[in-house]
Image (tube, rainbow, N blue to C red; front, side, top):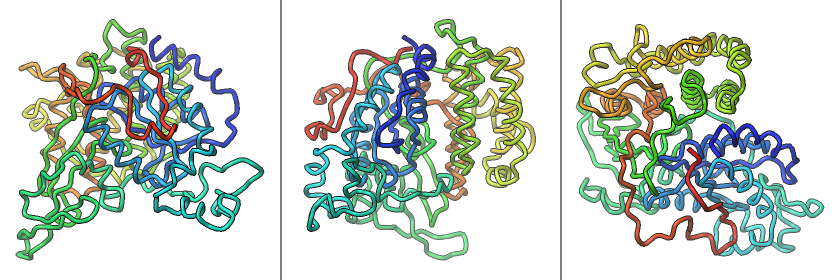
Length: 466
């Protein structure tokens, strides 16, 4: 069963109310598992939940796809930073996303949480040691008529558009420091508690000595391409140098999800429009436009679920006008990542990023996504054969040029702008992971180190339904 079949039946399966309220899900998307990620996002929304933007804000950690060694290590770091009550799980097929989430939610109020809290030093676990135990807990974790409140103690976290710099207490997990082990030792810094590095010193353009930090962005960040790591050198919060790579995919190779090939049941125009909406949803979320981002995801899912394009276009028009008229959005993305036509040719960039109008910045790129989505929904042909353009003359995929543009344009940007730059170009890791999966002979497929707590759930038996 493909993704569109799973989406068509999801509304009926999500009609049953959830006992504990909507979950806050920290989604770890693996390379090569785009279909699983899309189904997981839809299931979260259908259950009345939302995607968390940090471990502190989450009560469910959900791995979408098959993680390799380094992706699993990044997920383990995130799991260690989540406060209780917490559960984790894995889904490997789109049609299982709803069932996996539903299986996880009861465990948020189950007795296993007490065992999980032993030895932990967070606010929730300390309530278990107080006189009266759980009954005298606070912040929503006490006795409420027999129902544990899954989100108590997390608070209502305002979305600041994902502009965090990856160094605010959860940067190690989101920044993927674990995967480097001792690899930063050659930078001359000393390792601090938590795996962070002390700073080296380097000359600033004003002749001052400023701290230099080696900070990898990714492989797990809200609105971030799955498995992408951008190794940066920072002075303050300004990027001085950047290098990009994509972690290897685990499991058998699968062709990229988005290119509108004959193997997909969704029409090429609708599929490409859905891809543009997916990219827009991530950029809008990073820019703090949560309502508009949710609208983009709903329109995307309706297209992938097989709804008539004409009906989707009727709702796309008003949504597009609200996005286009957002002055704060234009202000947030204006001037970021100017990619001239000459530079696009030199870097091998095609697709909407190359067709964006002057001044060729991030704002011009998301405006181009909107315009081309409207054209596709009106029956237009898919330009360049795919949503990110055509392969380069030497055969490299379109996302290779997009990633090269990210690396070239990122120096000089603050970290918040660097995140928006990546979102405005949106290279697809599915095109960059290669055909050889990551070798992990010491791993047992689908298992994780926390499964002994009974809080990790997954459905085996297949790929991502493509």
